[in-house]
Length: 414
Image 1: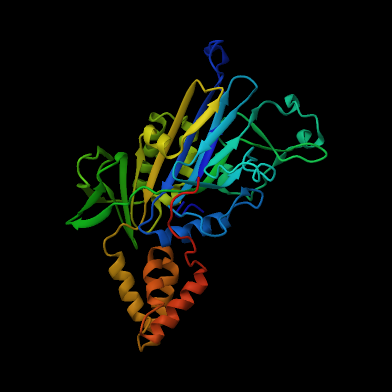
Image 2 (image 1 turned 135 degrees about the vertical axis):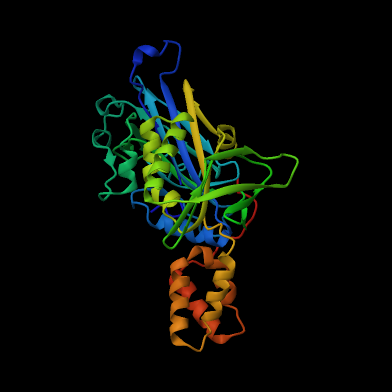
């Protein structure tokens, strides 16, 4: 599900009401988000389509129809609320460079009534009530029986519901019998935004040299490489502040052989680092469980790291009224398929599409179909090849993937 992963908001209840002074707002807001930044926009489009197609049908959406700016996907931010008493909250999230597209539960904006009145395409607004069901001021039948999302066993939503947090009630729309109501343990949202710049990788013996963009700070850095049965991981967790007066800097990551037990250890260590950054331990455990495949089981060279909360705030400014007594926003960035041999491997497979040997053509077709997004730009170029056999095969792969990028880069809509 999260092979190339969106954003989820969760608000939890505090376990010790006596610790809250009377003048303080009675809740904390904890959020985590994983931002995937593929090597190319075409791959990101493919990933985005596959991700959104897998969402539960009950999720709300405002999908792009045409000419919506594409700057990279935001992957599953989650917000939890932790409150010590019933309250109502006005929560506004703005995409500084992008637009929201999918969310759950109901948003106050956009909705079917407000969409024609307001045109704040970069904003997503929720008005959650953190109360017991019987305490909702709305006495309509819809409020008495709010909609609860049903998901199959093992779905990622189940992992998010294991967190001890405030129950959220969100109303949306109006009818003759009143507002409709949804209830959940968290708030989730997804959309399009400017993606963090991906590094480039080069081999340096057993190590990896990364050219890192100079305008970023990387914390809790981990690299994992899987090539068939071979598995390597970074020798140690790292982190560095980029040199701000340089366009790029090269950082060497020492790699060592690893096994499945090492990946289990790294998962536990990641949860500990997320908890140290401010998440509750069950929130950190939920993130690691949901992202296990994306972080630890993906093919190729993957690098992920945490960004400072200040960076998260710039990407997705958030305002809550009343203001929480504590706000925790933990963002991770995931770069996949950074292995420097990727383009050469894809080029060889595309050449094999024109082989005179049927077995070679079939093997190349199967490999490219299975690779999907990472090979997408070169497959698209091959569809215009002067070799009719390669062009035919490449077009057939594109049709099977149903992933032609339809969004052109442009200035974000406001």
